Every structure is written in structure tokens, then in C-alpha cells.
Image (cartoon, rainbow, N blue to C red; front, side, top):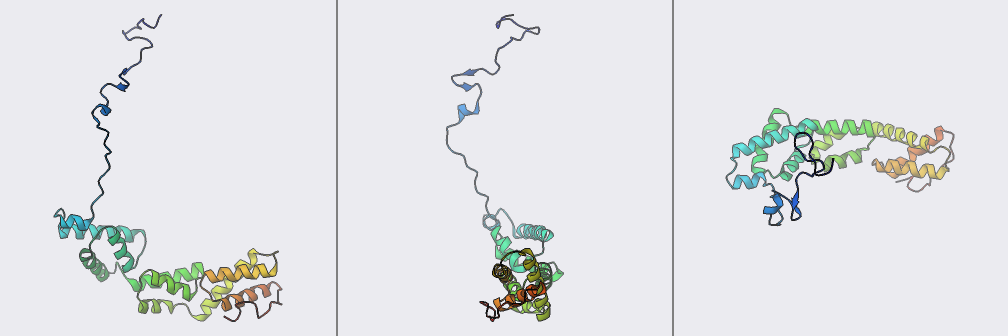
Length: 225
């Protein structure tokens, strides 16, 4: 059977469907396209839609409430963090403020409880010092008085115990290396957790002493800081 023959049913064998004419498919959308770029229009913010009359204040308030609930379902946040998140989404302060006030009233936003939780978990799980915890609370927009109350959960004994536990862990990781290298790495690791050089050196020296290294010099750089 040649290429011009037909198979049962009358269809030509070997013939290509959708033949092109003039280099483009028949009925192609490109025939009507003038070649101009067509970009998606940027989505307008809630504030812009309010100003244009597309949203009422009640509509915007409900949207803000739903957005806040989604954020808080994912993870607890401070009031300042929630304000920043909604501002980035284009919600005006006149809408955000009253909604957050209401969340405060019903306990869905509670900076004191949030600060207590953050201090407790960050200290227990990561061994952060009071100084590092204070910096994190400040970064999250917690008021100084609220932060100070939360930090009272960590007393000097708690802080020393956490530092010593970190020192033991880092010292154990460097067994077999030069002593000065071990000290430097462990002290650096504690410094990144917010511990002062003097505190870091002291607990590293104690951790090494537990392994039999009892000849560390007291004048090691930073030992008295």
C-alpha cells in the first residue's frame, strides 16, 4: 500500500494532521497576536482597594481577622510581629489596630505569655544565655518591661548549668585535637549563644578538667571578661 492509499475507514495512511500553512498552524492564536507583551497587573493592596471603594472597612476588618488567625495557627507571634506581617500585606493601621486590640482582649495575642514561652524553650532547647534571649525578645518587638519579667525565669545558676552543658558537648566533639583548638572552638560556640568570653572560658575549662585537662592557663584571652 502506497502513501496515497487509504486504510479501512477512509483515512489516509502517513498523512499528517493539522497541516501548517505559511509556517503557522491554521487557527493559531498567534495569527491575532500583535506581539505586544502582556504582563499580569500587580495586585492592589487592601489599603488601595479601600481607597478605591472596592472594599468596605467591615470587609477589610474581616479579611484582617482571617489573616491573623491563619498566621497564629501556624505559630505564635508577638503583637509587633503581627502588625508587621499585616503591614507587608497592605493592611492599613486603622484596620489592623482595632482587630489586634480585640485579639488582645480575648487572649489570642498575649505578649507576656509569648515572651515566657520563648525564653523557656530557647533556654531549655538551645541553651541561649540571658543576653541572647533579651536580644531575641527585642527583635520580636516585646516591650522591655515584659521582656524583663520573662527573663526572670533564667537565674544565674540556670545560665551556668546551660553553659556548662554546651561546653561539655562541644568539647566532646573535638577529642583528639590540639587543646588550644578545642578551647577556641568551644569558647566560640558559646559566644554565639550569647555567653561572655569569661563565662565561656570558665565552663570550657571545667569541661576539659572533667576529661583530665587541668593545666589550662587562667590568662587565656578573654578569660577575665
